[in-house]
Picture 1: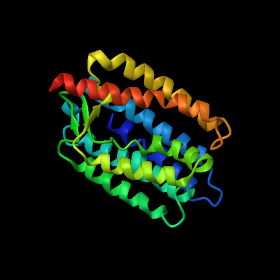
Picture 2 (picture 1 turned 180 degrees about the vertical axis):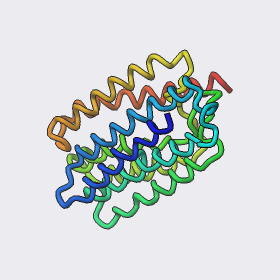
Picture 3 (picture 1 turned 45 degrees about the vertical axis):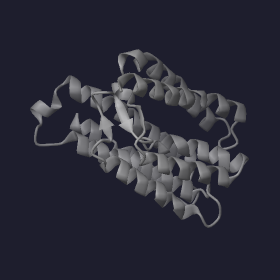
Picture 4 (picture 1 turned 120 degrees about the vertical axis):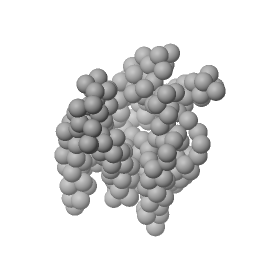
Length: 225
């Protein structure tokens, strides 16, 4: 299972290679990042299922997971936002605010509360946010991207709690899983449909799931206090 987790470095490296090309195709970068997300979504449950800690106690799979998560959930997608010019002129480097906030988020001792199935702060889903950033910057204004990025950066280090999808409580497990699956289909459609000039109607429909996710997280936190 440790090898499965570590295999995420392959699509991560390919994403960075594409990002460094003169004619970078953001859709290809997102495709590689989607692959890393799929790996991340299955390695934890499989590790627990096959008791990896028992058979490979000298290797800390969580450290591998956290390193790759920071690279593929935060660093690479934020660099893509900078690379594509999706922030106002002269403000591209402000992605480093989000990078720093995510570092603090990952390093926090209470970043994950597995007993309650919660993440602390905005869980650095910058790989998903970056998809919206391309649309917002192209069809509306780079300032919309900047303001939302800075706002989420602040939320990353605040003591707020959201549902941990892989450990979602029974009450929310099915809606979080199936909603996330439908959301993924919507995001893929956004990328395939003349991205970043994707239909705004589709983009707004896709935002229904993040709104549900926030609502479900608030409801769950209130129920476990």
